[in-house]
Image (tube, rainbow, N blue to C red; front, side, top):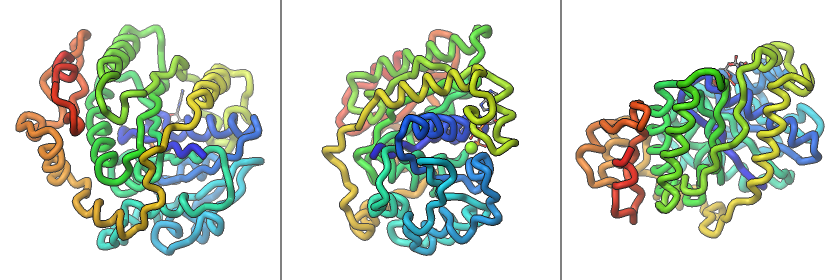
Length: 340
Ligand SMILES: Nc1ncnc2c1ncn2[C@@H]1O[C@H](COP(=O)(O)OP(=O)(O)OP(=O)(O)O)[C@@H](O)[C@H]1O
Ligand SMILES: [Mg+2]
């Protein structure tokens, strides 16, 4: 089973649209898919035609706070697709779990004990880097990042990569950033092309580093802006149920092919067997409030400049603020980061 978190703390970049439509095409190819809606906004739940208010008994909230198993909580929503629904109560889970030991690995343990069998588990994250996203990253083998080619995207990417480093170090050593997809892409604008070039260059320069994103694929498929993609959720339909021939459907078919081609990630240092208590001991130092993130970054980077600001002063060749992240342990040189 591939467990893939779809995350970007920036809102409205295409996380849910990508998750639902990629899952839908993979299911149509005979794959068994589990979808986890980790967003209290419950957009994925609504998108798939479930009223979040009706779904509270079996839900992500139940799994995170009431020890519900996935077998109990999953709802079949399409042929070969089961959904762990979300609802507004999920927003309260973060508060309720604040004192719980091992709170960052509840989802990981729930997925680890799931006996239902599936080929893909996609976790749709909320637009934040709080406990819910942390649970998703703690459970996943792969992170897929939807990115809008937008001026501020690179700054958001820096924060996300910092979080990935923390999670990789403290919670989930098997986590890899496996893919990045540009959504709402407009090939006619110079800005879109520049951002694609900047992001591609940035990750190319990281190939030789020991970072969790060294094997990232910048997907060739770019999801074009397409009004059908914006319309289909209001009918509770995937793009393939709404308009199978539009650009949006074409793009998501191609993206699903690229994702399927990645194949299973190596999980040699897989920690799934770890108990919640063991994990809690490790995760006790991880709490993604800003002060602690800064401290953790200092620990990784040993670098005052990195501690004082989220994004460095460097600029990309196109003059945009460059992604700037602390170095993973074991990396001596900062050259690749500073060359941006
Ligand atoms: N390629 C596209 N073309 C046009 N509209 C799109 C496209 N992709 C997504 N949208 C629309 O943009 C909005 C945001 O998309 P989506 O909900 O997938 O983003 P998100 O990252 O999940 O948002 P959030 O951070 O709020 O969870 C939605 O209204 C969606 O229908
Ligand atoms: Mg969403």
